[in-house]
Image (cartoon, helix red, strand yellow):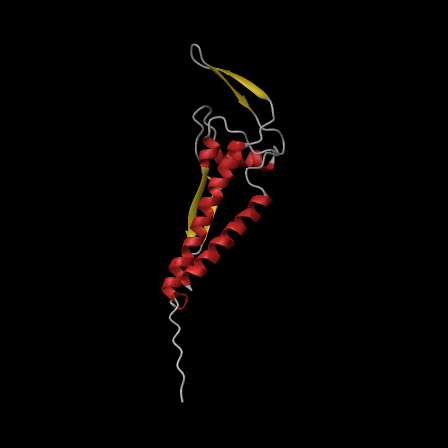
Length: 148
């Protein structure tokens, strides 16, 4: 007597496995980008309050961040510069793109480096990396379940 077992789960198909699992890094990077932007916008921002004049009948102010807090958005150039991109078949990254601030001509990536490493206003933290790993693991588990 001979027993034959056929394993037909999609996880055994190399192309299908690469297709489904290949979505994980890009999706994780997109989610990390959105979370980073949201954390910058939501604050807290407890630094100095700066008044700015506007046109006739208009004025506005800007609440800066304090040391240890994420940068407080003013023109949103830095927030919008948080970018994700695929770097390979199974990899992606989140970074600050080289966007120019319309108000002062500063490069967002250079400004981000100063904020992150010299002024104590982290854009991304070690905790964010742990959260990113957690998100990626959940996405990978979901992808594997889809293949089974």
